[in-house]
Image (tube, rainbow, N blue to C red; front, side):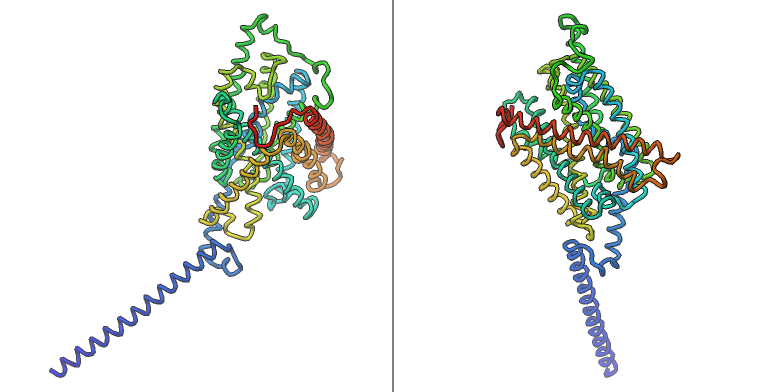
Length: 485
């Protein structure tokens, strides 16, 4: 009996000890989980520190994020560059051809297209030689140190934010045309800004490339319908196609500023180089970049002259910019409806290029830069909203916004696309004597690109300022935040 009681007492004591041990283990496990949760929360809020770099979770987040932003192939890159450059720019060329004449317009389009392919080759070579270059601001650092980094970064963001604002205004024109202009344009520009913001949420160009196929099909369809409708209208008009009064050479009385505004429209139609470093930074095989440049460049060299020449030949001196407005009320509504993806998707690409630079700079030493954590997404979406609002406010608040956009483009796009790549050749790429046998062709091409860029910079700036003075003096500007006609 006593033995039995002692045995029970021993078992009870053992059970109590195990319970206490279990409690301790549970408390320890809870404490570890709590510490891990606290550490994770700190990671999301404050980003990486030297100690957190040792954390396997952070390493996995960084590895996944890095892989996510290196999935772009050359075919997708070709689509992205095409839709970023073409947008509705192709439909501004017929009016440029009316000012310059058919032959000079077509000649300049093809020539500038070939020069752009060459300068894009130089930009790509810089990216291959200096893989750490993620955007044009980094290239500015290579050329001019910290000053170049800040200058190129500011110029890039200014050009892109104004471009997004321009897409918001173009969207308001399209939606207003579809609506019969029964609603104030500022409402439609706000709606356009919201759409541009939503489409800028995907942070990777690979996702945008999927939308790019829709964009490309949309612009081809819009251009095709415009050309066919204009051709049918010209055929059925008195005198037929031969009765359309188009000119081979510049029209009478054209001023220098008018002519160079037209030339600038052609130059800006090839302005995808501003995002090339950013695009190439996402490629899984960067050495394939020239395949995309050739595909994009040849597509633009084919589409631009055909669009400009045929629309001008079918419509004549009554051509408007964009040419969609010249095809009659019904066809304009149809083509604007088809072209809506072009307006918004192309505009969102500009947003993404700018946002990748700004977001990457803000969170350079944080896991937030990979946009694959809750705080990472919150920072990206918040920044996209702020960027889009600023673009919309600038576009609506500045009465001479279109001319100001032309001025900024004359100052910066000419550099990004022409004279800066030429400087890159002489300062970063050329090995040996500039005029040696292996370098002579690229050197001569770079000199030509520099001259074109410099002339476009000076003459484009002069022409735009002259246009601004004319508009402000005759009172043809719009009021801030007003309904535009």
